[in-house]
Length: 469
Image (cartoon, rainbow, N blue to C red; front, side, top):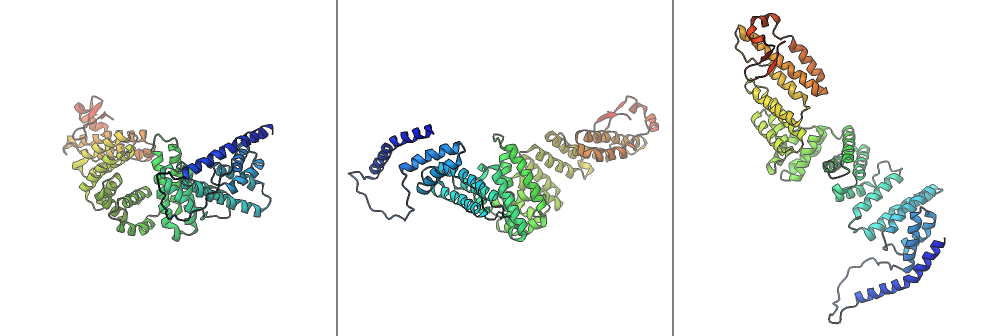
């Protein structure tokens, strides 16, 4: 108490001087220079700016100290005086006001009182926007985000949170990757609520919001300098899961929504790129709408996504040479090593359909392993290539030697299950199948020169050494 009395006395002694100096400064500033003639200007009517009084300055100090000490009952009176008379004085009015009103809500005795206080809190944010919405650090978009969070927490009767949706959307759209991660998540959540309440009305909006949210979270998660990168990835995984379960991710539904959009935006790179990435994310890469967007996007500006889209389109049309060319472009344009490995594996698959290109298929599978050493399906593919080969002549000796390909094939199947748990079941089946076709003991006895050393190098394009079994 002694400290508060002393603080009031000191402020009262100094404030008149401050006020006079401020008034004098205001007069000097508004006084036209002698050599200039003030020309009359037509001004638009503006809200009258409240005068900041000495009492407001004093009461700001009082409520700020009380809020700091969580003495909200003591802060209420001084804060209310400043808020009502000098709402343009300081952002502290609004930062402290949030805490004071929330305290009042927790202390309210009736539902009517709580409702009035909740509405007062919403008005507090509107007033902050009015007087401080152009603040460079905490602009209108940031304030709208705060308002939306409190609305969603307090107005539990609004199940869809439809009232808060435009505030959240404006906040996230304006701030972009500078948005707080929970705010991006809130956009996806509220949009999902609206979609579930009326799928036909909100389907396009939900897909658009999902894409915006995941694009921003992906951008944040890939920024290694951002301390929230890991959290962004976790939130994105959560949003992906919710979207996948929503029903809006259905490929035919996406086609229905985006076919007219793509048709109307064949020269709009931004729109086309978003469509390509959305279809890729949803696994709808066999769609004609996806192909159309990818092809148009690739003509305007080749990207990883558009190259993959064009490659898949060529595969569907059985234009394999063009498919390889597009996948190679995708490898060059990709940043992620796992994506590079996937595109190279697709090229390996294309070359695996013809015996004359088996060696090319193996080359691309090996390249894929350089980018993803745990990609067991590359070894499964190479093993199958070996098992399908006949590097020796079709005479009596050659027929025995051709069975040696099963040794090196099984070697690859063993490697696959050692590095990739997802390949274990398939690898075991292949090992069981091809082990039955190894050269028999009698056949090995017939070719002592070839099989006596304990190791054997399979000839032809294979050229791999294995152990005799």
